Length: 121
Image 1 (tube, rainbow, N blue to C red):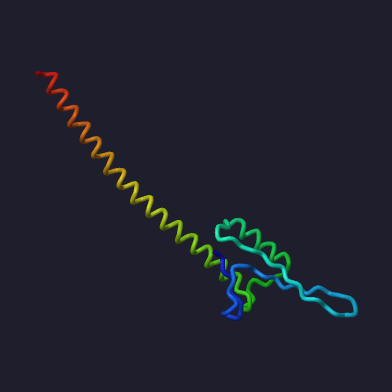
Image 2 (cartoon, rainbow, N blue to C red; image 1 turned 90 degrees about the vertical axis):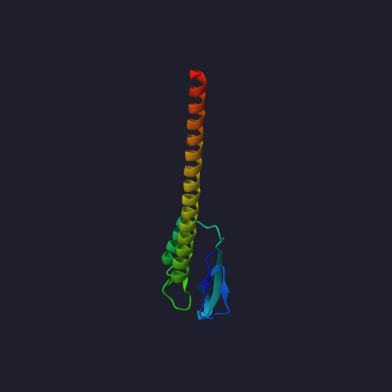
């Protein structure tokens, strides 16, 4: 899950809010929000498009009040850690499979020796 933190530590959320100032008549402006929900299984290439869209909308990713860049980096690091864990698990399974294959070959060799011994009698 990508978590965006704001300057207020109690305002940690799993959605990204962009605050946009919309000009209105008589010199007044209205504050509008755009909320982007970011699911936990969002692929990195989808996040890249999201951040590029934010840059295109002149959103400051380096704003200390909206730590989007840091959250994105943490999200990618977490995905990398998960992938490394999966790779280690697969390597363990592969080494176990190697031992099973060697045991099967050894039993096949024993069977072949027994079969040859029975034929020679």
